[in-house]
Length: 178
Length: 223
Image (cartoon, rainbow over all chains, first blue to last red; front, side):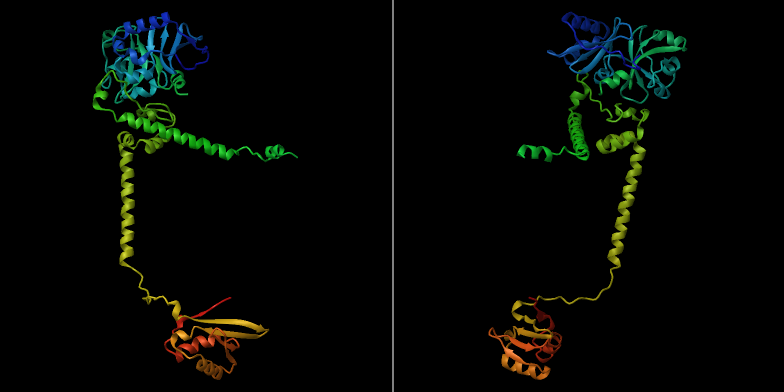
C-alpha cells in the first residue's frame, strides 16, 4: 500500500473529539492499550494528521514528530516503530525463514509459510490486524490483515492468508528516518 | 580608499575543503553522542527489561535503517557489517560468529610472528668492536690551537692552555722554534704565537713529548 508517497497533504491539528475517537477505537481493538496510554499520548503534546489523496480515507497520525499509527476507514493500524517498542500490543504470527526475502519486497503471505515447520499460527478472526515475525528474529517485519480465520487456514492451506499493508523499508518507514 | 573597502576585498569565504571537513567533524560528533546514549540505555536494570510496560530498545543500523539483524536483506550488506564492527563489537560477535573467529585467529597469528622475530633478534646480536667508554674531557685540561692570517700565504698559530699541565712557556716556545724552524713569541695573555701553519704537526708532536697531554685534549678553535 505504501510503495510511493506522492499525494501527502499538509498537517492539520486534531480536535479534542478526534483524539477521543482515536483512543476509543484503540481501546476496542487492542486491550493492552490501557496500560501504555500515557506513554504513547503524553499530555500537552501536538497531535497532527496527514491525509493521503491517492487512497480512500487513509490518514497518518503524528505525535511530536513521531509517527504512531494510520487509519483505514474504521481500523486503526499502528506503525512498526510502536510495535518494536511494545511488542505485546498485537497478535503475533511467524513465518518460515525462506519467505522473509519476499515479504520485505512487498508480497502477500501465503498459507504454506504459516503451516510449515518454521511457522506459528495463533488464534485470530477474519479482518483482524496482525504482526508478522520471521523465523529466528526478534523484531517484527510487517503488519497485515487476515483474509480468513485461523481455523479455516488449518483445514485448507491454500492461497493468500494475510494481506500486507506495511513492511520494513517502504515509504512510510523511510518517512520517519529523514 | 577607506578601510572598509580593503576589508571587503580581503575577506575570503572558507574554501570547499574546509566546509567538507567541518561537516565530517559534525557528523562524527553526532555519531559519538548517539552511541553514548544507546550504551547508557542498554545498561538498564533487569526489572525494567522484563517489564512489558517499559518501552523496549531496538538498535537501528545507521546505513540501511533496518534493525540490526535484518541488515543482510538490505541493499548494502557489506557496508552495514563494517559499521557494526566499529560501533558495536559485541553485537558483531553474536550476529556473525564465523567472521569474528577468523579475525581473532589472524590477530593471534600476527602476534606470534612478532614474538618470533623479537626472539631471533635477541639470539643473533651482531658482534661489534667494544668501544672504550669515552670519559669526557674536562675543560681545565683542554689545549687550544688557533690559526690566523697575517698576509696572503702567511699564517699565525696560537697555543693556549699549556700552563694547566705544569709546563714552562719559555722552554716550550724555544723547543718548538728549534724543531720546526719558525719564529715564536709570547702573547700578553700567556699564549705562544708561532709563524706559519703548524696545526697538523703540533697535533702529532705534542703527545709524544709530553705524555700528559692526550690526543683528545687538543682542539682547534675557530673564530
